[in-house]
Length: 301
Picture 1 (cartoon, rainbow, N blue to C red):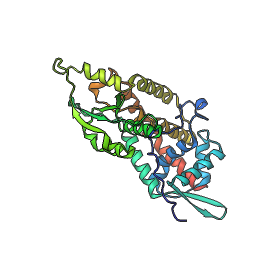
Picture 2: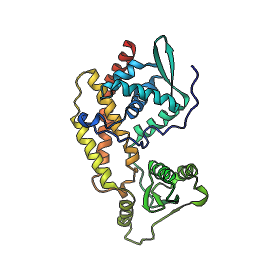
Picture 3: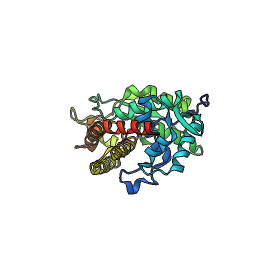
Picture 4: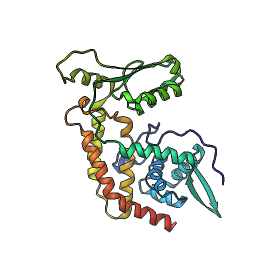
């Protein structure tokens, strides 16, 4: 079956309209969309293997994290409609494979997700500033501009003013402005704060960071992540597979929530550092068992 015409998909790991789940199973069912969990399964298990997968394998894996069969089938169909999955019939059964657009989507997302949380280089004090606005009436473009800039780590300092301590992200900023159709009316420049404090004093810079990003909310999300992951004690292959899906599903949201600020701009004892260490530790510990169980389920189908 030929691949469907690709639809420009939302980046894997980028903000989605559906709420993301807590790792607590009681809150997870109904909170996480089947589509979001399917993307996690695709990025974690299907992309690395590069092989078609039976519908029943997806449905079994999704069932482990609370997704009903009907919702799982709808997620697969939606993935095909969005252009990142294609299917092939084998009698009354069906296999699913990633399209070229799907592979690009997941490859870009997994690079961002698994690389997120690495130490950030020392800051040189410069800010990348974007002056851009969209008419109040155009809610779709306002949402696009806000979410895409936030996904690239920009904070909203005031209406129409976005900042980042990463001057090298000018290219990403221009791409977002082009996508929103406001490139011609926007301004981008690099500058420093006009504040003369003691050498090495970052008090004013931290104040700006506190206005541009909701760091207290991000830290609370990290604390919740730490608490919930520490509660996970999977016993057996299927429980480990489920735990791995939940772990990655929850971690996926942090590249959007956390702008990845340099240490100079973060509150003391930033919990994101501990959360990243825990994620990578548990991911590495559970991955061999989870991968083996996924392969067994694919073969059993």
